[in-house]
Image (tube, rainbow, N blue to C red):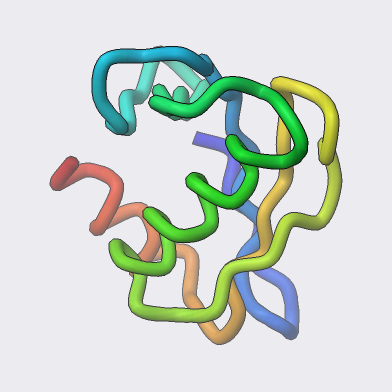
Length: 91
């Protein structure tokens, strides 16, 4: 997984797979895949990812880059790298 710790929190890099049957997270090699139910129209996927990761991490989540791309970078404010890794391994 590509997770970088910064002074604001952690930057998590992920790859989005839209139009899935259910929302789920999967780790394949070094990549974190996010399977989303929504279609990539008018930011629906971005809102779904932020909502679900907020529920998982219990911390503020912001999209930093990749607004219209499948490759996204999210900032999880106030999180430590080991916290994020532990939560993602349990998924």
